[in-house]
Amino acid sequence: MKTLNINLTDANYNIYIRNGIIDNLEEEISKVYSGHKIVVITDENVEKLYYERLCSSLKKYDLYKIVIKPGEKSKSIETLTEVYSKLAGFKISRSDLIIAFGGGVVGDLGGFAAATFLRGISYIQIPTSLLAQIDSSIGGKVAVDLKEGKNLVGSFYHPKAVFIDPTLLKTLSTRFLHDGMGEVIKYGAIRNRELFYKVMNFKDDNELLENIEDVIYSCCSIKKAVVENDEKDNGERMILNFGHTIGHAVEEFFNYEKYTHGEGVAYGMYAITKNSEELGLTEKGTVLDIKKVLEKYNLSYNIEGLNNDKIIETAALDKKTRGEFINIILIKNIGECFIKKIKKSEMNKYLKV
Ligand code: GLY
Image (cartoon, rainbow, N blue to C red; front, side, top):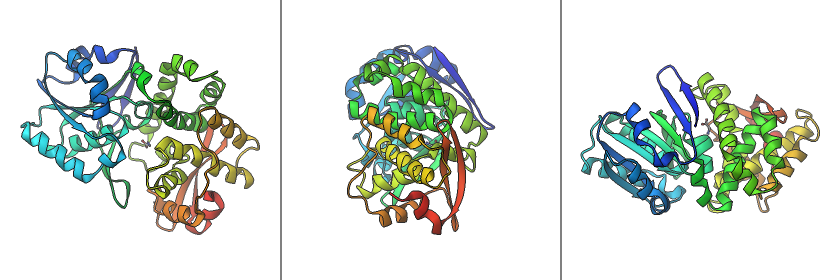
């Protein structure tokens, strides 16, 4: 088992990475939770595939479940209200525990419900998608979307532990495995050149899956270091958003129906690096390597039908905006990134698509 400890001023928790860990949770959970009642928040897909196994692994607890519909549309105030009602119906108290068992939507929504119900209940993340295992389950960002934009209502609220079982990825569709690879490539591009070229050189998805535990560990190690230095996202943590300003705008441009988060980020990394290479801020040839790795995982670097003005308009609302300025993340070369503060009037130069 690989373990990482996240050590913050007000929170300290472990990330456990092990094949088959969902079959052996009782001992680890009892180290962070001494009660009996657990509510599992999950979605219909994960419930069908893995809920029975989770139950067998948590026999000594009284389990309750809340099952939401899969997909980003569930990360809403409406679903959150339903979750609150169910928690109230189960008579959950502050000394009980929530487990968010699913992908990014379940993790963000379940975490936000835990952060706010009764002003805070302990929770544990058991992420089941690659994207959730390497990114959204770690670092305490929990949120729901508004119709005006993604993650607009949220909090920083850390879990008591994160349990990552790479074997769960075997049932992930190729599209969603590659969606997660968008974020893996991001980690390589900003902080780990070796990881970037390692995933670029895997023969195929089988070789990727054979090595996925190490890949997950590398990504989580980067996230740990960044979050420990800047938990509240005022400085260094922004680097985790490489490719995201354009990526989010692309997701929104297509109403969150055509491109997944990782696909948007993949395109965003390519587009911003193409611009920064042309502006002489990135070493020549870098964007070509990004293109090669995106091609390998079937991620788009060329998207038809985008409207540049609309993308810039949406990007201007990004959470990295500070008054008349916006912080953008660029890479100098593969493995080395920096934050650049630009005027909103210069956005077209850096963020054009
Ligand atoms: N997913 C970016 C962050 O956690 O800051």
